[in-house]
Length: 407
Ligand code: OVV
Image (cartoon, rainbow, N blue to C red; front, top):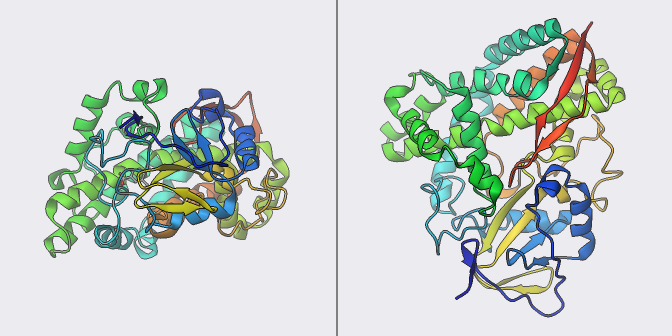
């Protein structure tokens, strides 16, 4: 049996479009728009011989495959590695890398811990932290907004929300990069982010223990559900690990990308300032426009089909969420950023039973940041070239020079 990147090599059926592209080429990961449009134009699904996977990028089919958990499972990993055939790099997540019925129980616990009601309790923390950061960047004027703004906010508020006694911003950001890079092939990008694997994983796993957490944070809520018998205590620590895996790099990316969108589109910034009711829709548009999670995979759990083509059990399918979010058959003038677009159905938080369970807290964080910005900042101007950072599943900025001009 031939293997490629930890999954079984497949033979595409006659007539399926074939494209000799490496979607994990650093140049594509940095500036993916032409790859997105070429992928959509090839047809669907497209066979990529480089990794022997299928890829989908048109909105309708991407949405369908991504949310069809019965045919396209998550339990064999959401990256190129098939967990049924090769040992995953870490113990599989018990919420991300799992199917119903197991998924249903852990999802319920996480959804309750991250409910709107719980997130409302963090409003003051988010607001105060956003004020402190915005005041400081206004004093500096021109900053590198990834390291001096986007990374600072989540690494300040999130450990507090989880209830971590001791945090380490660098480890949290670097662990997120590892988790999201691990979804891709064993390329240079992935290997580089894994260089400090032993040290970082040891710290992260340790930080999930109950005695490292306060009694009033998100972590404590999960452990309380273990006390109540809904999950085991080992499962509780695994769900805290999911907070630390998925809760930092994603929101760092959201903040950086929001600042980029608004600095590049001063007219949209003005509209947002004039109408705070657009804060939430503006964040959705940032997600549609930049797709922080650009690609996640699924595995065909049984023989099935996509767009009329047979798909064999064990086939890996790349769901290119970034391409779907830019599909002109779904979105009018998709390459224009509009704070009042209200992009219903965008795939920035995924879709279906695995749709982002943390989206309430992500929205709470982003809305707090944007609200303080519109109150205190007159203009957000580019102060140099924005450079994107290649990552196998996250589309994020590496450097973003910005000048903030106060009211
Ligand atoms: C959605 C997501 C991304 C990365 C990691 C996890 C979840 C996890 O549960 O570990």
